[in-house]
Amino acid sequence: MDKGITIFFVIILVIICMCLGALAFYFLQGYIITSTECPTVNQQEATLNQSEQQELSKLRLLESNLTSSIIIFGQISKIDGSELTLTSGTTSAIIPLTPDTKIYTTNKTGQQVEIQLSDVKVGESIQVAVRLSPIGDMVGYSAMIVE
Image 1: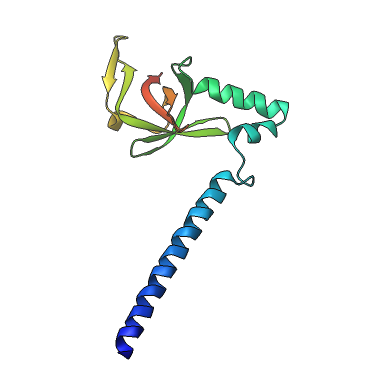
Image 2 (image 1 turned 180 degrees about the vertical axis):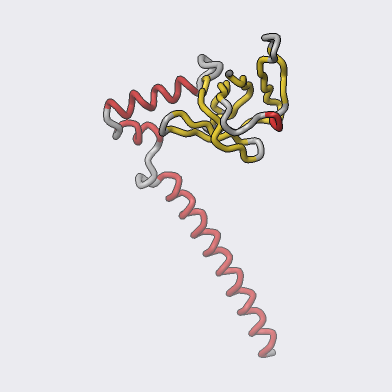
């Protein structure tokens, strides 16, 4: 009989712990969602000064449908897989290329011909047409070696 009562109390204790845990999770989740310590985007924007708001506006324009591409120009300082590091003066940018990226150069007769990424060499000047991805990363989709 003592074993039966002990098992009964253990089961009741487990059920109570599960209910308390579920209740705590429910209230904690509600706190996280409605907490004033986690400001919304509009609250964060309200704290930006005018210059910062203008910069944010420019970034939104660049990732909108109004901007089809951005041209990045520089000298190739590094090739790492499908990423090109372009340098111009003291500024550099890493531009990832997609598998579908078309790369062109001008042949000896002046015609544009498509080449492979493996044909591109460090030190060449290049212009890359990039788009901003939905998460804000630059992705190159077309490139032209510039002589």
